[in-house]
Every structure is written in C-alpha cells, then in structure tokens.
Image (cartoon, rainbow, N blue to C red; front, side):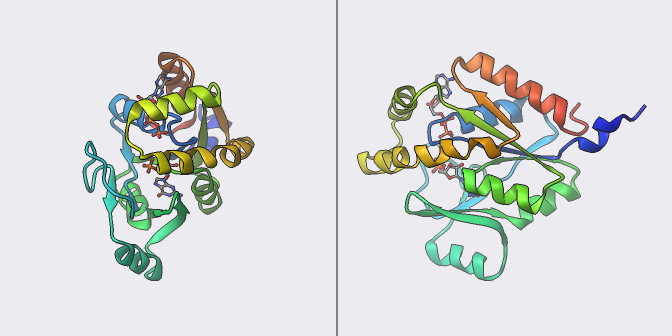
Length: 196
Ligand code: ADP
Ligand code: 5GP
C-alpha cells in the first residue's frame, strides 16, 4: 500500500553547516553509498583547492563569468560568502530531473533556505551541528586549506549559521564521524524517493 509517507518523500537533499562542519565528508559518503544520488556542482569565484577538480567539486568561474550567469538567470540562488560568490545552477537541477536522479547540495544556510523556498515539496534540509566551537576550529585548522584571514572570516559567520539551524528539517550532531554517517544515512533512507 502506498501510505501517506509516499507523498511526503523528497528528492533534493540539502546539507548545510558552518565551514569545517563536515558537509564535504558526509556528502562524499552519501554519494558512495547511494548511486541514485548526484552531487549538485555549484558555481563559485573562489580559488580552487589542490584536491579539487573543476566541474566535479565546483565550476570555478571568474567574477565576470559569475556575474554573467546572474544576469542570464542561470542560478536558482547565490550568495556572497567569505568574499566570494557561490551559486546553484538551474541546469544541475534540470539535468537531475531529466535523468531521474536524487540531487545532493552542499550549500550555506541561506542557500539552503532559498532552495527550500524554491522547492518546498522536494527539499530535505539537514544541518550538521559541530560538537562545540573549539572542535570546529580544530577541524578547520587541521584541514589546512585556509589562510589566517580566511579562517577568521569562516569563524566569524558561525554564530549566524547556528542561529538558523531551527529552520532545518533535521539537525545532526557531528561528533563521532561513524555515528554521524549512520544517522544521516538513515534520514536519507527514510525521507528520499527510490534509493535502492
Ligand atoms: P565542510 O565541507 O563542512 O567545510 P569538511 O567535510 O571538509 O567540512 O570537514 C572539515 C574537516 O573536519 C575535514 O578535515 C574532515 O575530515 C574533518 N571532520 C569532519 N567530520 C569529522 C568528525 N566527525 N570527526 C573528526 N573530524 C571530522
Ligand atoms: P567552501 O569554500 O568551503 O567550499 O564553501 C564555502 C561555503 O559556501 C560553504 O558553506 C558551502 O556550503 C557554501 N556553498 C557552496 N556552494 C554553494 C552554493 O551554490 N550556494 C550557496 N548559497 N552556498 C554554497
């Protein structure tokens, strides 16, 4: 029998957290666990990190190229974050719909709310909560991807980000990684369409 739940199931998984909160780690786990899930590759004007690939992690654009996409209405949403632009491309969503894929987003808290507003029936918002600010700082430092200036900019935003967590469908404490992965996996299994 198709219960009430059938109609409640979602197709857009939105992961959000402060910088260093574990979005990339958890996104990679979900992508390797569920072949039906595709990553929504965002556009950004920030510099590529050594371990990132253009077109896979982000579309790395110049400021002019990004502005052109805004002008042409190619973005579902965009934000200026830590001095750079980040935005979700319409084409990623259209492509996923065409290929019957579940889409996974790694976006900031404001972007998550915008996606929920644009797709209220389809979006499932998950906020990853750091155990405490010191642990978050340590994880970000240990990642060794940010300059001191970038590190400070990222930490300056944490308070605002934590204040928005109540707007999310699920808040998951990211303390022990194995437990977090299991919890997010279960949320996805219980709330997302035809995964297996
Ligand atoms: P984000 O994408 O949200 O900025 P990352 O996934 O890059 O965060 O995680 C930041 C750093 O913290 C990475 O080096 C990652 O390996 C580490 N990390 C993430 N979750 C945990 C956890 N639960 N315990 C310990 N380290 C973690
Ligand atoms: P990072 O530079 O660490 O990859 O990302 C910085 C922040 O930008 C993170 O919070 C990340 O989730 C967010 N982000 C990445 N892509 C997008 C996007 O398309 N839209 C929005 N609003 N935020 C994004």
